[in-house]
Length: 115
View (cartoon, one colour):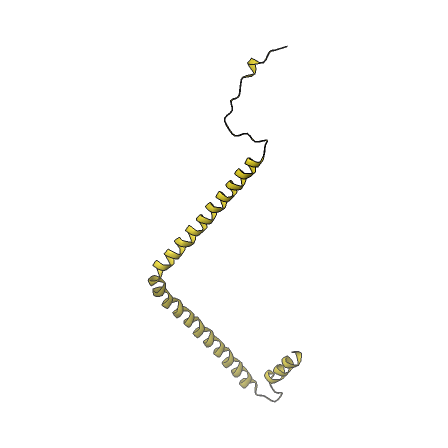
């Protein structure tokens, strides 16, 4: 790779007897070509974006349906996961003898005899 770079440096480097005016003009021409290419690329990019807008306008209903579908799918997955966790917790509580289902009532401390 280093050899390849050195070869390009030798090709680009102006010859010792070259006219300085021609060197400057060639670099200016090269710079102008780069600027023209950059400008054309930006114009094509802008043109592509402009053409993309009507296409997106036509496809907006499909995009909205897809967005609603993914939202509904996420909600369904969340609900299914919550339901699965509730079922697992209910099964664990059924198997655990320490858990008693039913109602309870807290009695006041006044019913205890005092010492």
